[in-house]
Image (cartoon, helix red, strand yellow):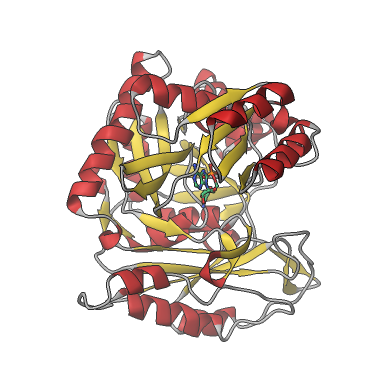
Length: 429
Ligand code: AMP
Ligand code: GLY
């Protein structure tokens, strides 16, 4: 089977790398891909990043199965178009992708379905939003309704802070058009967990839990980013917690979406807060996470291609889903200036040496420039390792980071440390 992946970041490199090792997959294409993807797959140019543009690419390579890395094509309706054209696509329909495309849709859906989530108010004007602040204590969380590339969530510690944020959001200064409808939300505390399932529209099978590190600096300080690293370890959740999440969040979402006539087929990503009241949903994404995927797929065994294909065909087969017990860690190396406007064009060295030190280096923002590998985006590389223990996985990833160089390179030194701390005294940590 020939598989086409839409996108060109670290997540897509990891998907291509894993599919390349799937016995059922004969050829992997990535559109547009990046220099890392080109090491394991054939990269295809995208003349126009629209649904029709992607259809053209899929026809050119005669793909048997198509997967989207990012959410934008899904929210634009790429799945519906491919289905109409008779090409197998694994992803939610445009209607189901609203779980990520509209925070108001997602919150109202969770309310109807009885899925645990923070108390909220959905507002459509500045006056309404300011009035609704009365229903909340501080800090309060303010979220733009539409896709905002990770920039649509602001935590406000005082009323004046909240009013200023609302002013800026409704004026389009923070997230453009995404800010014309806004959700106010109760602030939750606890440990964040990324929980991802693969659904055929009726059943959903879970990947292992993982944890992202969203802030730019160690100890979760500084501004939010797309994700500075992730780790995956089975111990992130107890058996009971996992069963509770599967029952009250994942399967309940799939059941209700089907009942409402918008079945969800695809990767369902729940960003969870493990609160004292139990696991609660912070957000849904309708795709795999970045950089969680790099860590997760590094642990995955079995035929990922067949897992996705069976799910796309409406008969997800769990036998193709296997994980190694060893924990994995992905450390993101970011460019100077990130998460603001990143500097690009810096020469990258040391990747081969890093891979000799038992890491896999996934490319995110890289390009070939005058015959050399150079930085081309905010998140540049995802250095990923496994170990017999979480401590060993962390050590291997950082040993590999130490031999990679580009000017202005910045990365967090504490990816996975929370896990180490939590399991101190438990075997291996
Ligand atoms: P989201 O895009 O909705 O996941 O929000 C981005 C980040 O904001 C999350 O990963 C959390 O760290 C934080 N966040 C979102 N909603 C809440 C909430 N209700 N309480 C506390 N933190 C939140
Ligand atoms: N790592 C968070 C995301 O992919 O949205």
